[in-house]
Image (cartoon, rainbow, N blue to C red; front, side, top):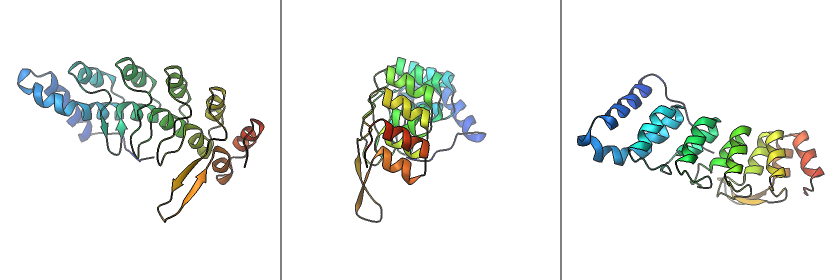
Length: 202
């Protein structure tokens, strides 16, 4: 999963100026159409639904992805921003779109323990057993981070407790990761016990 920072200060001013530029008139429309997908990601990073609505109204691609962030929906899910998540999904954001290195919305929510957002995404059709290269599955991520309630929700929603993913290691070689192996590696005993009770095997 990639790291990110919420914009403040000067960066927020830049984003505000971008909003002004988008609504400023037909002369800027062409460039706005090109850049507004990235601006939409910035709006999600700032939890600014007002700016997001402006960009979407001006034709921003709701599924635009930017390296290091993913889509606006991935960012909103990671932050646990339910209002932004609802807005983006209602505007057609793909709840199952994955981005290399940035996972997908449900994995982002699961790995950060954002239970309300995860529940909403699942209700909207997010695949609880989705496998994303280098980011595994929602359940593996939730188990690794010790988010017991998230693990419970995913399993109740059909997540396979024995779905394991082979991951290439930066140092070379690979390893097989499962929800149980990750919970045990990070000493999340409550998560491991729950998984075993639900049929997880070594």
